Length: 120
Image (cartoon, rainbow, N blue to C red; front, side, top):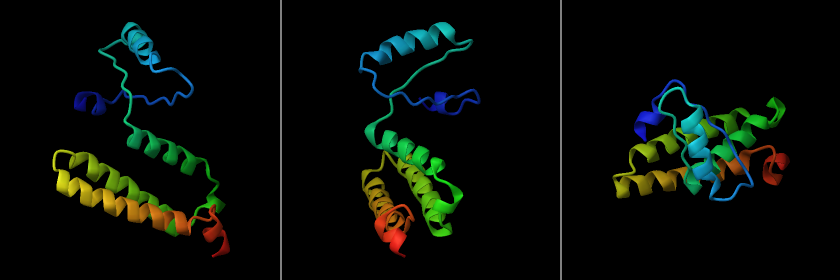
């Protein structure tokens, strides 16, 4: 898997509403169409949620983002990367998860798209 993630020709697609069996069809299609050794992978639930949150954040207009929420978003991204690299160290990974949860709560509180953020 690490080999796939370090490639320069990596593309990410988000698909919704397809059955679980679609992964096999997609893998066959990627193998057929790729010029190299292409592959398709299904992300775990937490990483999928991160991707969706990232997409939602990207769609916000600049006026809907504050400097604080943007900085907290960068912190969330960094903590996600740290969690990935600590996946073989359960205690440290759990500490990073807790930090990430706290940062996410703060970002939600300060976000101008939430009620508390709009009131601020």
